[in-house]
Length: 423
Length: 188
Image (cartoon, rainbow over all chains, first blue to last red; front, side):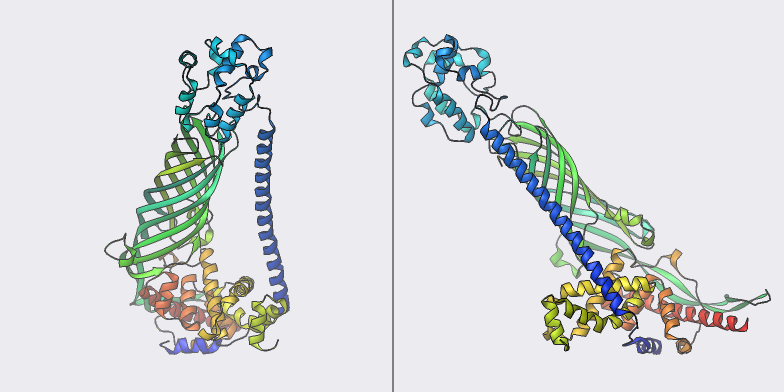
């Protein structure tokens, strides 16, 4: 402290105790703490209840699928129709013929052992046919295999009379019965999505004085892991975490004030009880505002929780187009400094770590992606994400924000990733 | 339970009685700090409660080898109050032209503060714009340097200095106005 006034002020308030009802204040604090604990508990219980419901729902669905008769299982992509599963003796010659095609002696032992193929194998092995039927094989009924995209032509199977090598040559991904990996009638509807991407950030300043600062986006990296759960064949919800890192350039104006004395200025107006007034003139100390242009960099790292919902359209057997929207909320650490290279924070001078803060209230996110199912368990996808930080817009609507600098971040990122099915 | 060390040990274990003892011991002084940053006593009470809730959470991080408890306590409380103000959007880092107070007389003697009561002085501090009040509080009462203030408030050091100068001038003007109102009331 450099002057007498500061010393005096400090002296007047130093160690000063303000009498107040401490017991009542403590009681209020206890009440506030209890209320807050109840609030936390509510969120935990609600979250826990939702999780339990989700698990129970998944379990019930799983049990239901397990208990379904084979003849009703997977109706969309049925390989063998109920009529084929009936005893051979009750069927027609045509049915016997079709069953016989799949009743090759060593075939079931050579098939790979995915769940779908187990079902397939079980059904085949349940057919008991006389070997003597084999020579009588003729062309099967076409509609029986209409959904089997990857099997060779039945005509070819019959005429070549060498089904086993052909079945062995079929790669696992092409085995029938899988259908769309996202279909609820399939056994692998849900997916983990792992993605990374690069994009752009834009920011606009709004609020009281947008001219005082502007912010340019420099880069934006992100990586994320999401779990996408299909409620129906097309509708999905997903949750996951995302790590984003983006750099911005702040073009700011520092405001400072310089004292300047002006003579003969109105200092004070004194109102007298009789209604008259007196104006007092004299030298007036006027503060002159000085503006200094400043530019610095800020790097923000955020870890966010994402909740999304959307729709998926099937573009054929392997291609899918998804789009959805949701919210993202988390914590961000910001650093700022000045340097030649904005993309290299280690070179920044005057580096400051700004406080952690949450991205309250949240960002709106929009996502869309095109995915390709490479096999029954995984695939690729290309996506685009866009986000809009709503937090500062809310601040701008506050009456207390006067004089604050409002920022609104918008970003768009191209992503590429892997998609794992069957969870 | 009476010694501060015992109270702190028990508080770190989450003992409610110890927390109450800690509250009763330091609340009056912390209330003074909160009053200087708030606009009225109700807001000061809110600040005080939020500060203590935060302090109880942070108490495990207190390391007696790194300094006294009181210093730590007031430091944490100050930071928390600043954080609350920032969350509420009440901590502008710049003063804009439309918010500038009217300029005052050129020379007002510093000794004017000797002519007013503590209550009037506190009321005058509370009338300062948020930015001025924060810088004045941090520099004069918390005895932070301009470098520390600029770091925590995200402003330049020159801005911190100019806001302090301006805050003191405005404070004196407010005190003068208080005195002249008082004088007129007496005359009437």
